[in-house]
Length: 244
Ligand code: PGA
Image 1: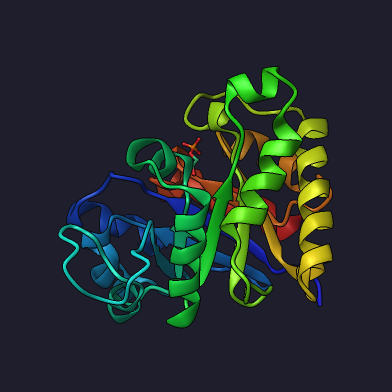
Image 2: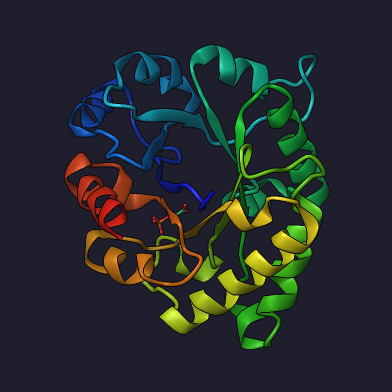
């Protein structure tokens, strides 16, 4: 089995019901998963609206199944709303909410328990890259954030350099290749089917750079923020991945 290709859109805190029409123009090509992770308020409506094999996911979940956690959402609730995936440990959550690797691993375990695919995000800051710490940071985040029980069937890893997110700056192909090779090596050493896990790149992916990024070894797709909000921007990225 080869890693399954995935083009994943992360709408972050953008979109209202008026935005749902964007998914009408999306379909999943043969052999290529297409996923949109809208705000939680739109998951159920989007799940009812998507067609052509397009999937819907959440942007976070709590590690607990239910209880007194005001404002949080459980994996079971995401599943109930029609989600198949959940993004976990995005750098914005690590920064805004102080999420640790251990918390991300616990959330991923909860997602797995509900049959959701966890998209676990890792990535270095500008300062960490400048200090030559990138590979250490990625290895540490991978070891700490990916729980036992992860497999190619329930886990996707997204490498998102913090400095590349929303900035228009992307790493060189060599920099992406170096990190993805490390991730493949570590995941293959730890998990029986680590060689088959889908590895995404994320951070300022757009139609104009997608082809080059998808040509890099061990890049099996993308996690796309800004360029996933409009079908006109996202569809060409999906097409580039299908053709890669
Ligand atoms: P961006 O965001 O594509 O807008 O850089 C990517 C992400 O944060 O997942």
